Length: 492
Image (cartoon, rainbow, N blue to C red):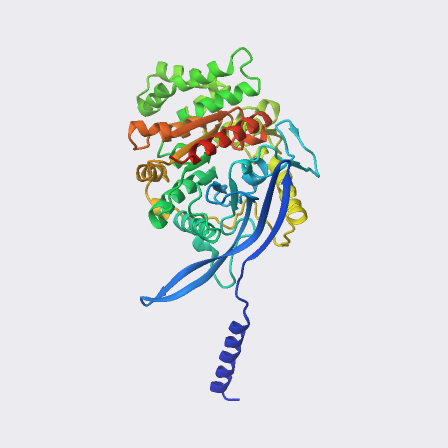
């Protein structure tokens, strides 16, 4: 066979392969359930995300790009146009929606225990009598490369691993679900946790400006609105005073302020914030007396030695602080929930080597979801369910090159465009990743009319980032979310 014929045969084989390649299609399973007086339908699996393709200024149709894992619950015998619907996602970036799904919102929840009283393997499932399904249908979305969401064969997942594409793709899933289920006239809500706050502010704005979809409300759980407030860098001293009240509360929780009331201690740390900023701004112009006073004040509030504060140059970077606080007990604290503690291999580590909170909750949540989806929702998928995917990194923030990642302007914009949008923000006193004061500081920067601030409600709980692992907080938070959805859903 000549080389030319050989090449032609090869091309024919390639074309045959392309012809045999299956077209991606939705893979969904629907089941019916009851929870006390609630009768509801659950649907779970993967739906295909398509994108419009234009080449050489010609429209070439819609192309399958990814298969997105999704679970939704609808109440039976309810009037769809009057029934609210809430779209839920977690953060990371790289996190699936497992945490909100199985910890707070869904009709079944994990039996995980709490700090100091974790449930041992093999864990378990409980009915969630406080499920938000009582007040709104629920749709849980796993972004591309999390959960069972994947790019389709031949497509690159990396294009979804960044700020803008992530917002656009999840917004498209929301638009698609709303259209297919004829829910454009339903009250609509978002709920996002952590980076889900970053994502949620962007999605709320995108839905409004791209699709004309006006929301009734957005619920933020420990939202990461402004990264400059959360990460200690040489370019900004902003986080230091914002984290100090969390350090004080953490030291109190672990018994290092036995003669102080928590609220008084936190109030003192908050009151010191302005002076703390001024101290850091002076830098080398501080007098020895001013520096000594600042060292003593920070050390007394944070529960660490003056020598440590002095060596840290007055700046207690949080992952180092969580390694230092209980070093004398040979323990590190959690970051996302500083009530949690755990041992480490060496006790001279500069930074915490792991987060005891994440380790303590990962097993229960993973086991519960895997069992629940297969056994109760009857969906089978043998691929790895990516709870917190490493594959999404490095995450692209190219839109923020040379500046801090900050989405509070997007939230402000959608609140100005939609005068009916209500906002709920939940915060944890022991959240050592996204402290209360960092969230409050960022909300204070919202550029909206003063009277519109009444549309924002904040709630704080005596727990951490996922405050619902704490039973008292879970019950209060469930009631707060329920009341918010009922109020913001009212017409007229």
